Length: 464
Image (cartoon, rainbow, N blue to C red; front, side):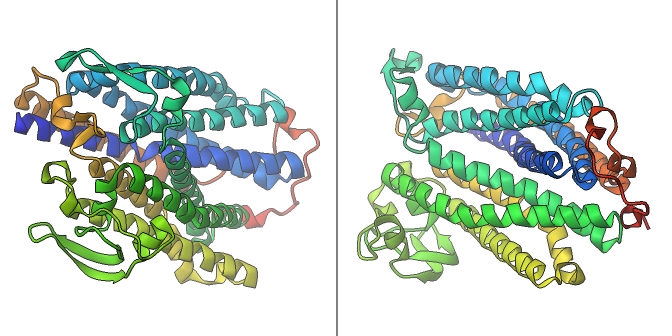
């Protein structure tokens, strides 16, 4: 049973981590498409039309990959975690049904117009379709986060049945939706997605600047990515701070694991370090009383330590400590990077600093890593509970599952997902190397109405 549990957890962690590469990009790019196409409608500048056409193609790729990689997890609920699925079925059924109605129907209804309607519908209708697809992507995130947050802080339910037939039944739908952690986690998660989209746009733009290609397109992409990225990066610590206070109130073991805090009392905030779980000692550089101040606005107030929590109820402290601090470190690095770029932009030297542009190129990995580390911190941090305080992870496992079955499917999924990842990288790289089409600077069909003329010698967009 231990091997089955470990393999099932590994399989789900792998599939959801791989899937989570793509939805943040789709959400972030969806918002950017709305901003760019809105600028196109307002200014009639052909450059924004070119930007919108190019990034729509990249959005379509990330959207398709997100759909393809997300299906497997739904099957795993039934094959690997049938007891858990029975327990949360009433809760998840309502949330995921809402996702189907408000997200999938909305996205699928307007996606074809977004992708293929550029020359067939008017610019206002196309902009409306873009808004609806972006809204659908955000709605999908809303209902997934609501369902997951309910596992962290259950509310609006009661338990019915006995033994393996026990299940949670909704008594108050809106209390379930607005459970104590859902809105804070939603805002923080969406911020991570917007950062992922912003850094991708800025990264590709910086690459073109360094290669002296598509100059106007490249510079506009860098500026759009920096502007959105800085705004979101500055807000993320605020949303994270409020979310941390919710964790302190409802999941004290998770908060203690985040900071390797063992002895109940005023708690420091570690900048970096490591945890010796055998001795219950955390080593590193810390700011005394800072965690207490962040949680209680008082550096002298106590924080519950792991020594006051039964060993069986503690998460893996060392792992959670490192992933949590890695997420924070990347977030601080992104703030510094975006702020520095904005300063260079203001000084008019942004595109003269090649070393900085190379940092922007590789910064596309930052939000992806931070999103993964944050997700792992949240999910591993609630262990050993699969539903916090109600259902332990081993109890949610399917009773007839065998280790060799899980291992075989894990190996097959790994192989298939690696192929999908190679395909994604190949297609994305192909789109980036091809670059935006100069023909998109001359809108056709109904989009050509009222457009500003293209300069006679658009050499700034030619490939060199």
